[in-house]
Each structure stands twice: as structure tokens, then as C-alpha cells.
Length: 324
Image (cartoon, rainbow, N blue to C red; front, side, top):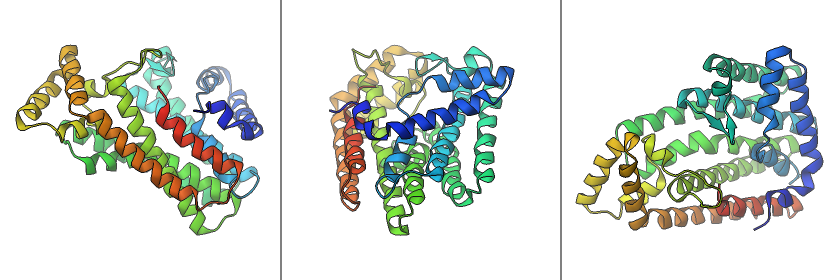
């Protein structure tokens, strides 16, 4: 598997410019807000969202000012939602360091998130990126809907594939979809290619979330990724669904009862993980992930051959094979 750095080497100049835009946003603020924004932006992560914007734009042209605006808009909005999520989840860590709500307080985290939303809107209006903003903002609505759907499914113990995919399309896939859609839009490609890119991004998002859900059950000894967080929070994810479909009524009833206490009982959590693995919940989820991979590759074949297309194909493998 190629490293992420190797996959994205052909867009290094784009990503450097992107980082300079983030630095300008943080540096242009005063006192505490400047400190908070620098703290938020200093942990880069993989920058998968702007990477998708730049690579999809490069399928057809060289990134321009609108492409850079698309990259910064999706990143600001995504970061804002993470700040708010951490408050809701009472998170202590984000990407290996203290979350903003833990380092400062909940009010600070919420207001910082609000600022990033407002800053995204100002960038869009200042540069008259109305069409671009119209493409991106529905994803934020979808994110909120997805969170509410997931809460409802958890409360009612809805072990249901259809409802699971509704949630992850809204929660995870919607924003990756608009990354690809906005990238191709800024390249000047036609509506057919824009919608193809949107579908490709949605599938990438689905694959990404399935892999996350698998890792929550199996973790990784080398990275020390903690398992069982989704179970503790009562989330119904694909490994459980796939395992559930292979369980008899007695085992399903046992798992339902264990789920009701898993939030406060680590032994119940471990029993659920063991049963899901035993009943092929992980292998079943991996099979589903591979089906979506094939769909994504079929869509990529519709785009012109280029280094950007090769990189997008490599990103699919990277997401599937990652261990954290």
C-alpha cells in the first residue's frame, strides 16, 4: 500500500497553499481566538477533504482560486462540526491531544465552531462563490440529520442495514461527496461529470465509515486504537448488523441485553465484540466494503486518465487498508 504522502505528492503545492490560508485565518484574529485557532489547525491529520477537492479538480484542470476556496470551505465547516461534536460527546481527546472543550471549556469550543462556520460564509460571500456555497452547505444539514438518526436508531436498538446506510450517507459520506463535487465543479467540467464525482465521493465516504466501524471492533495492537467506543455509545454499526444476521434468536436476545448495559460494563462490551467476530460481522463488513470499492473504481473509469485519477484509486486502497 502506498503511503498517503506518496499518494498526494503531486498536489503538494496545492496543500501548501491550503495550509497558508489556514494560517492566515488564525493569524488575522486577536488574542484568545488566535491561540485557539492555531491550536486547532496545528494538528493537520491527513486533510482528506481538501485532498479530494484538489485531486478531483485536477481530473480536468489546474486548481484556481475557486478550487482553493472550496478546499478551505469544506475544511472550516468540517472542523466546526468536530468542535461541536466533541462538546456533545464530552470528548477529552481529538487526534491524540486535548480537545478544545477539554483544554478550555464547552462554551469556548461551541463559539470557536460558530466562528468557523461564519468565516466560511464570509469567504464564500466575499468572493461571490454562491454556487459553490450552494453545493457545500446541504452537507452540513445532512450531518445534523445523520446524528439525529443515529441517536434514534441507538435508542430503539434498530439493527437494520437500510437505516445504517441512511445514517452514514448523511453523517460521513455527504461531506466527502461535496468535496469531490465542488472540486470537479471548479474545474469547469460538465454537469454529468460533476454528478459522477459527487457519487464517487459518497461511496468513498461510505467505505471510510465502514472501515472506522470495523476498527472499533478489532482495533490494532501497534497503534493502540481503542475498541468498543461505538458499543459504549450504543451505536449500531455494520459489523454488528452483519454478525446479527448470522445469529439465532437466542444469541440476538443475549446481544440485545448486553447492549443495554455495555455503556457501564466492559465485560459486556467484550462479549459483544467476541460474538460479532464469531458470527462473521467483520468479514461480512469487509465484503460490503469491497463491493463499494468496485463501484468507486467503475466510476473512476469514466474520468480521463491522469495522475489525479491514479491517486484517487490509491486513496480507496489506503482507506480500506489503514489501521487507524
